[in-house]
Length: 130
Image 1: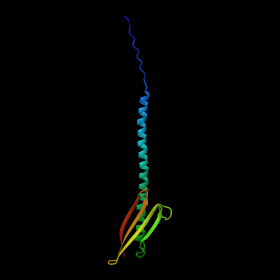
Image 2: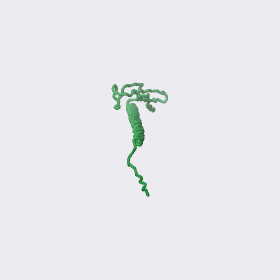
Image 3: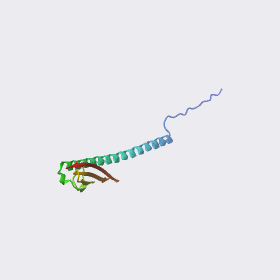
Protein backbone atom coordinates (compact mmCIF):
# COMPACT_ATOMS: atom_id res chain seq x y z
CA UNK A 1 0.00 0.00 0.00
CA UNK A 2 1.34 3.23 -1.01
CA UNK A 3 0.69 6.03 1.24
CA UNK A 4 -0.56 9.04 -0.48
CA UNK A 5 0.72 12.13 1.22
CA UNK A 6 -1.15 15.34 0.84
CA UNK A 7 0.57 18.46 1.66
CA UNK A 8 -1.45 21.25 3.26
CA UNK A 9 0.03 24.41 1.98
CA UNK A 10 -2.16 26.89 3.86
CA UNK A 11 -0.69 30.24 4.61
CA UNK A 12 -2.32 32.86 6.76
CA UNK A 13 -2.30 36.48 5.64
CA UNK A 14 -3.69 38.85 3.05
CA UNK A 15 -3.18 38.76 -0.65
CA UNK A 16 -2.05 41.83 -2.54
CA UNK A 17 -5.50 42.19 -4.13
CA UNK A 18 -7.22 42.17 -0.73
CA UNK A 19 -4.88 44.90 0.51
CA UNK A 20 -5.57 47.01 -2.60
CA UNK A 21 -9.33 46.69 -2.16
CA UNK A 22 -9.08 47.62 1.52
CA UNK A 23 -6.98 50.69 0.63
CA UNK A 24 -9.49 51.74 -2.03
CA UNK A 25 -12.38 51.53 0.46
CA UNK A 26 -10.35 53.42 3.07
CA UNK A 27 -9.48 56.14 0.53
CA UNK A 28 -13.14 56.62 -0.42
CA UNK A 29 -13.97 57.05 3.27
CA UNK A 30 -11.21 59.63 3.72
CA UNK A 31 -12.43 61.58 0.69
CA UNK A 32 -15.95 61.66 2.14
CA UNK A 33 -14.65 62.92 5.49
CA UNK A 34 -12.58 65.57 3.71
CA UNK A 35 -15.61 66.82 1.76
CA UNK A 36 -17.72 66.86 4.92
CA UNK A 37 -15.05 68.84 6.78
CA UNK A 38 -14.90 71.46 4.03
CA UNK A 39 -18.69 71.77 4.10
CA UNK A 40 -18.70 72.20 7.90
CA UNK A 41 -16.02 74.92 7.73
CA UNK A 42 -18.00 76.81 5.07
CA UNK A 43 -21.25 76.48 7.04
CA UNK A 44 -19.56 77.77 10.21
CA UNK A 45 -18.22 80.79 8.31
CA UNK A 46 -21.66 81.56 6.87
CA UNK A 47 -23.34 81.11 10.26
CA UNK A 48 -20.84 83.43 11.93
CA UNK A 49 -21.50 86.10 9.29
CA UNK A 50 -25.28 85.71 9.63
CA UNK A 51 -25.07 86.05 13.41
CA UNK A 52 -22.87 89.12 13.09
CA UNK A 53 -25.24 90.72 10.56
CA UNK A 54 -28.27 90.16 12.79
CA UNK A 55 -26.37 91.63 15.74
CA UNK A 56 -25.32 94.70 13.70
CA UNK A 57 -28.89 95.26 12.49
CA UNK A 58 -30.28 94.95 16.00
CA UNK A 59 -27.65 97.33 17.40
CA UNK A 60 -28.45 99.93 14.71
CA UNK A 61 -32.16 99.57 15.44
CA UNK A 62 -31.53 100.04 19.19
CA UNK A 63 -29.40 103.14 18.50
CA UNK A 64 -32.20 104.67 16.42
CA UNK A 65 -34.82 103.95 19.08
CA UNK A 66 -32.64 105.45 21.82
CA UNK A 67 -31.82 108.60 19.86
CA UNK A 68 -33.84 111.72 19.21
CA UNK A 69 -36.85 111.35 16.92
CA UNK A 70 -35.58 114.08 14.59
CA UNK A 71 -32.24 112.32 14.10
CA UNK A 72 -33.85 109.24 12.54
CA UNK A 73 -32.98 109.71 8.86
CA UNK A 74 -31.84 107.65 5.87
CA UNK A 75 -28.23 106.59 6.23
CA UNK A 76 -25.73 104.21 4.62
CA UNK A 77 -22.50 102.81 6.04
CA UNK A 78 -20.08 100.46 4.33
CA UNK A 79 -17.19 98.28 5.36
CA UNK A 80 -18.52 97.57 8.86
CA UNK A 81 -16.72 94.99 10.98
CA UNK A 82 -18.34 92.80 13.64
CA UNK A 83 -18.21 95.68 16.13
CA UNK A 84 -19.91 98.12 13.75
CA UNK A 85 -16.73 100.08 13.02
CA UNK A 86 -16.67 101.40 9.46
CA UNK A 87 -13.82 100.81 7.05
CA UNK A 88 -12.42 97.41 7.92
CA UNK A 89 -15.22 94.86 7.51
CA UNK A 90 -17.40 93.08 4.98
CA UNK A 91 -20.82 94.39 6.07
CA UNK A 92 -22.83 97.27 4.60
CA UNK A 93 -25.74 98.87 6.46
CA UNK A 94 -28.58 100.82 4.83
CA UNK A 95 -31.19 102.60 6.93
CA UNK A 96 -34.40 103.60 5.13
CA UNK A 97 -36.88 105.87 6.91
CA UNK A 98 -40.45 106.51 5.79
CA UNK A 99 -42.27 109.31 7.63
CA UNK A 100 -46.02 109.40 8.19
CA UNK A 101 -47.54 112.76 9.20
CA UNK A 102 -50.87 111.80 10.77
CA UNK A 103 -50.32 110.21 13.22
CA UNK A 104 -46.66 111.20 13.44
CA UNK A 105 -44.46 108.10 13.21
CA UNK A 106 -41.56 106.74 11.17
CA UNK A 107 -41.18 103.30 9.66
CA UNK A 108 -37.53 102.34 9.89
CA UNK A 109 -35.91 99.51 7.94
CA UNK A 110 -32.34 98.45 8.65
CA UNK A 111 -30.65 96.21 6.04
CA UNK A 112 -27.25 94.67 6.60
CA UNK A 113 -25.71 93.05 3.52
CA UNK A 114 -22.48 91.18 2.80
CA UNK A 115 -20.98 88.62 0.41
CA UNK A 116 -19.56 85.23 1.36
CA UNK A 117 -19.17 84.78 -1.71
CA UNK A 118 -22.90 84.96 -2.59
CA UNK A 119 -24.73 88.21 -1.74
CA UNK A 120 -26.61 87.95 1.57
CA UNK A 121 -28.89 90.33 3.45
CA UNK A 122 -30.61 90.68 6.82
CA UNK A 123 -33.47 93.16 7.18
CA UNK A 124 -35.31 94.43 10.25
CA UNK A 125 -38.22 96.84 10.32
CA UNK A 126 -39.92 98.75 13.12
CA UNK A 127 -42.20 101.72 13.75
CA UNK A 128 -40.98 104.58 15.94
CA UNK A 129 -43.56 107.11 17.16
CA UNK A 130 -42.86 110.71 18.09
